[in-house]
Length: 99
Image 1: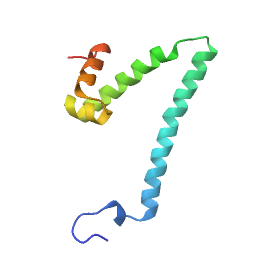
Image 2 (image 1 turned 90 degrees about the vertical axis):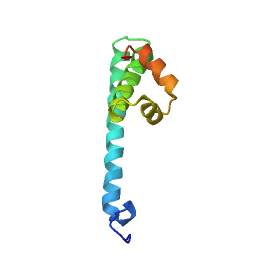
Image 3 (image 1 turned 180 degrees about the vertical axis):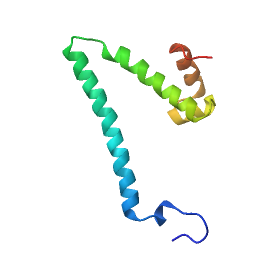
Image 4 (image 1 turned 120 degrees about the vertical axis):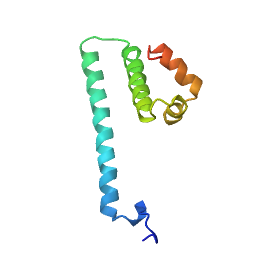
């Protein structure tokens, strides 16, 4: 147990830490399963060039979420996405999200 008023993850019971990990795994599997279902359905209906539609949509969603998370701070949003600020600015223009 940590001395002081700060509670660290290592202070928590293992069950709580494991439950959080399982929840994250479940959420991750859910969006991946949804994506797989979408791709299978699109291919079964004869659609082609799926990535030309899916990648811009994925990037658009990620950009919006990152900018929302960082209260519109582009430098921070770029960092959480693993991009440089110039890449983020270019993507905003490409995806018609620029101010």
